[in-house]
Length: 218
Length: 117
Image (cartoon, rainbow over all chains, first blue to last red; front, side):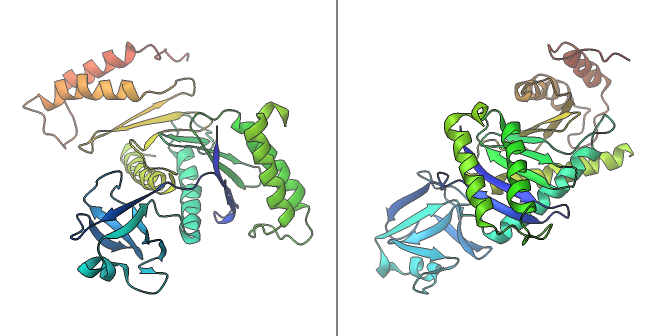
């Protein structure tokens, strides 16, 4: 019963708010390797990513998150050494590397939000019945995405565990929090990114309550 | 919208959905995208390891059709298209036998009901 993240998309399709629940850190795998490295790594999208050689839970697409405890920043380590060079020279071995799914950068989130905006519209066009709404829920084996579009075109998107129930009530409650703490805020301009502390605090406490007490109490 | 356009739109949409889902997923996925629903219909999706995609549009009252689509692949597609020497894999399927068997199969599903006109 967990909520992973929340996105709010304005009527033009750009992301105006996002929130990731704190308990959903992506699991990372840390292992010690000896030379030569059996995994094939390559630079993809400014990150060092496993291209071939899945083993021990390290899958294709996992990125190098850190080496010997030092976190990675894109292609380089925190001390500015290039990761592929460090992994290529034998004198650095045995070496401890942390792999995991790369965290989404803010640019990627903005792209995914616009993608969802378009997919929502195409969902209504492909309908075999007339007058269909856009995509309301999207299910995969690891998460379920719920989307509620208001009359003004703002979309509230929640990503939860596939078995989470009562998400409609959570979406409605989120709309109320948006109306109270964003729209009624005199310093907030419509369709702009929401930067109000009270909105953040109120939304987070609403989501925590929904998780702990179950929806019927809200 | 013409059938051709609808197919292209559907293919493009599913390709984008698959990429979207793989990036957004909080953990590694095994099967990926399963279905989506709107206010009027539900689209079920199943992809075989060879890249063949099965799509079924139903109304909102049905649950998961993944097993149904899997069975459609193994007991109808493989039997009447793959094993048919006259069917060219990758080309549009014109086999009448396939169409009839598929129709029988769908009509026999417990979720199938005739729409009241």
